[in-house]
Length: 246
Image 1 (cartoon, rainbow, N blue to C red):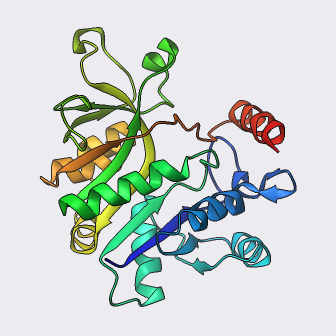
Image 2 (cartoon, rainbow, N blue to C red):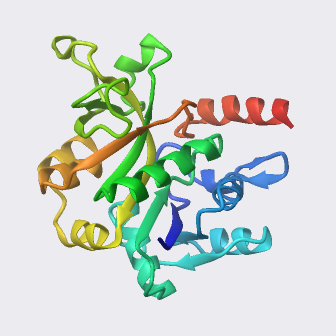
């Protein structure tokens, strides 16, 4: 089954402008993610961006990048345009990997891909155990509730995604959602044809568009709880971890 990995990236992030080009160990954040994606050895890897500076950085570091429109509202809409420009007619699965998670585990990416191939699901993502109780009230940490626990299913269906946990939800089958999606090609085409849903806009979570249009999202378990870079504090924390590991 032919798979392609596309990483959406842009300089104009509201909370930390310019973050894709911030450097750790002499390499930009976006190029660290490209290397992780390549090391997964699942398929070709491209960055989709509206910024020429990101294109140049990715090319300089041995990656491939596609320049896209600056009108896209979500990363998935951006990767869809890039996919059309790349023009690979035999692609069956498309992985949307976030450009701000340089600590994502390669084995977790492979596990998601394997589950999608094995089950022929429409759309898959990753989630890990919640390691810190503060995450429940942190709106930057996206949570997912699954219909079954990972003890009962390797690839349970997502019931709901949220930013803020409410006390009446209980702690059953609630996990830390990680920013990666694997789409069957026809599902990706359907997804971008739908307008943004009310839940998507309200929660600032594009996966709500899928659920609101009856696209099932299945969730694979990630052994590592990857941290995304949303703020200056996140960047400093990740920089320390990555510099220590090197």
